[in-house]
Image 1 (tube, rainbow, N blue to C red):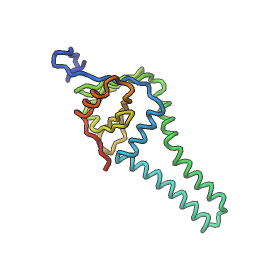
Image 2 (cartoon, one colour):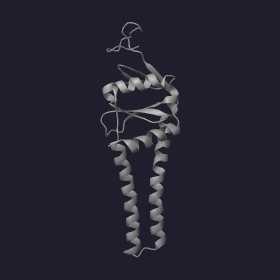
Image 3 (cartoon, rainbow, N blue to C red):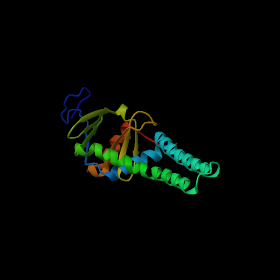
Image 4 (cartoon, rainbow, N blue to C red):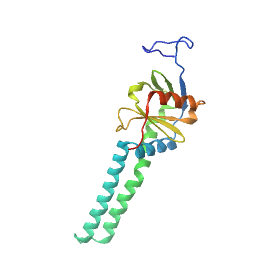
Length: 183
């Protein structure tokens, strides 16, 4: 167990109990995390709005081309369909891209205690203090720790299936982070 200066502390000597979450990320995990982030954070809603504005702009542009520019109806319809496909495929492409990035990392081992969060994989170890993970969201299948401010896109995913003690995990997260309530 780590102390405030990174030294090992034995349980029973004022040490804080830790909670461990072990999981191998799946595409379903990332879909759930990204969808929750997009619905419940300022940055996510802004990104989603931007995508919809682009699709609406492409649709309006195609309509204008068809009406004012005298472009045939078929090319205008193709532009509309392409804009809609981009909107619909965006989340799938994002999940695929992230899955490629984590494929070589294997199992994720996340240890949370009163000092912070340590994420270990086969290729890296990342330590984050609680100030780096200020907010959290909870879904039926996971906890998401969000870093920085309410507008950030940085998150740590903690699937509930990865721990045997979800109650203790929730207590630890609640003690150190604020619940992000959509505004």
